[in-house]
Image 1 (cartoon, rainbow, N blue to C red):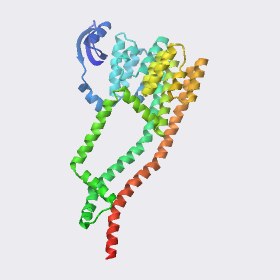
Image 2 (cartoon, rainbow, N blue to C red):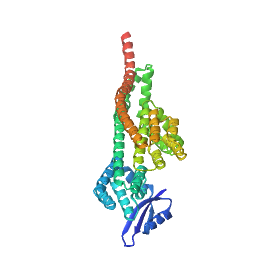
Image 3 (tube, rainbow, N blue to C red):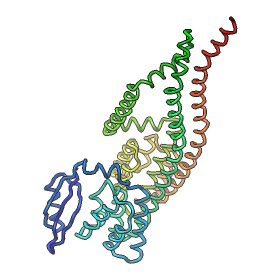
Image 4 (cartoon, one colour):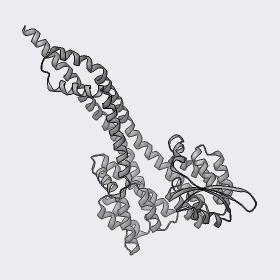
Length: 406
């Protein structure tokens, strides 16, 4: 679907602006007319029009969504009407991107759309989880409760993501600094020793020859262009490959098989599945719709395939546990708790317990992983520095021994 910006007029003469994703201009025109508006202009939004927003504006984070939901809950609980609440939230939201989309949603609601319907026009901003839970809250008259659950869910997700990112910040910084230091040594310091070794006119040991070759490569301007080209090429290739489902499945399998990291990735998937499913179920979203939302929200294509099979099972009157067991992704404890929850009619309660357990496991494992990475990084740096030192010292020892034999 393409994105379109429309300008319309109410019968009172007021101007209405909005964005919508649609198949074509005719679909946009039909939508605007259904809202009782008169279309005055429809413009297709090209990707280049979002260049500045994508790269220079602050992105909408889980934290922004959690704050939005929490503030929305406070306003609704205070008896503020839906339209007034949206107007207030647009006014006080700090993130300019989110502020703009809240304004668009407010306009749609002003013209008669429900909150969930208005949000569904901007799927890249408001996730399917939020849209489905709000739709269920509107139907059941529990919008305040649903927004509270959403705020809690996004707060949990934000903290969990921050914990995982923090575990990898230290190694990334250390490796980057080490790479820069080694590049400087090989580019500016090593040539001095290279000239000295060439003046000796003796056969150099293989570590020294390897180091000299790397240094010569880095000194040439072509080398940096080559490495930059390789980096850009790999990035473009990856961006193309992630559009193919087969590659995503292969990537998932690879990540799950990695030592330590694979286990952490598996726990993250389980935590997302259980937490989101519990939230949807508690909000009154039917199980088939909940499975459809959860399958897209775990971030794992393999899990998505498993949940699709589970959906087929549920349609046929069977349970979730069987396809989950066959997948090999879910541990026996999770499968047993799902099975017990289905039999006792307390699946949402069981999923809450699973989410709490695996959320704690992810946090603990992230901390342990950070602790384990420190000595591993020291070992890597020691090997690199040791190789450079040995490569430089071996010819000198050889030269000293020859002088001593004279």
